[in-house]
Image 1: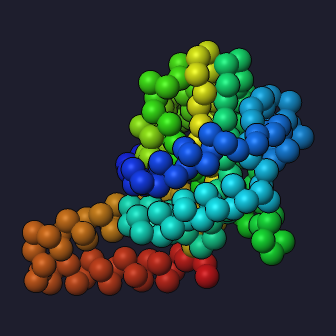
Image 2 (image 1 turned 45 degrees about the vertical axis):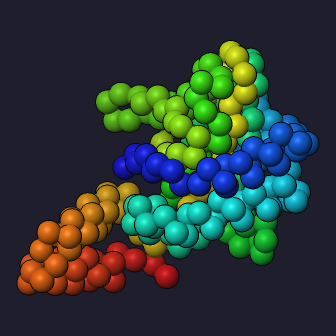
Length: 226
């Protein structure tokens, strides 16, 4: 499932991110790439342990916690602390699949990367190129979103970032270990949760609403890991 989540960050939060990132020290983005990905990756990245990445990452994590669309779609068990990258003219990231396992920098715990996310931090008119291209079963989808919007997609998906030809593309990115490992099961639960929400608006006293809610939670019990 590939999902666009609009307005994850408020305008005030975007302003804080832009101000900090404009003054930040950027390093080689290959430091977080695996051996294969490093061969096709050329971008800049904030140091994972630096104050800028940690403090701005906390802003992003706070925004995710209050975003019910993200929670419904990802069913997050663990969210990897957000990282921040920049693509300047001539930079790109060739086709790759994200590492299946990541080590949390805070406690050394290993997590499984079920979902990948890119949160765009500057406007698409600020740069040319830089589309995130995600391969699907029958076609590829190019993604270039408004500042503050995020794309969520299976980490198992082959994807790439097209070369930037003007300006700079700035984004946060991270991974999620979901309580529900299987993407098709998560998609079913997401559709069911959205349907329950809609029915709650149109028929809040419906017996069907109670039954569907029970089915949702029983499926979480069946498929979920805690």
